[in-house]
Image 1 (tube, protein in one colour):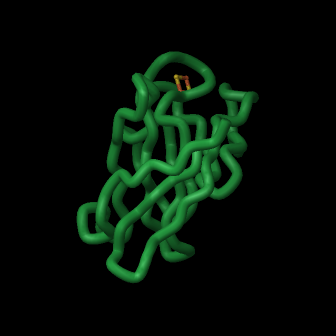
Image 2 (cartoon, rainbow, N blue to C red):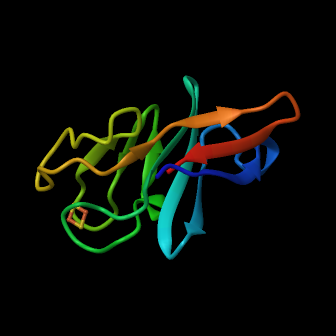
Length: 103
Ligand code: FES
């Protein structure tokens, strides 16, 4: 069953930043890039660390622990050592700037 969850307003996640949210004990990172807002699982697929604590460059977020970069649009790792994608979630932003994800 899918659920739509409102997490934030757009001004809480300025362009070029990442913010972590907890949804049902699941960590989600909202990422604001030049291409818009994206939502990814906030847990590196290589080990249990938060991707939201890494560096964001364009649509790539680099894990702070071993340096794998994940494409926030697809969740796919672009560099080793991670080889498994992280989950992504559809994001919508309404006319008032409320950011919601579908989980
Ligand atoms: S924990 Fe993220 S690349 Fe190793």
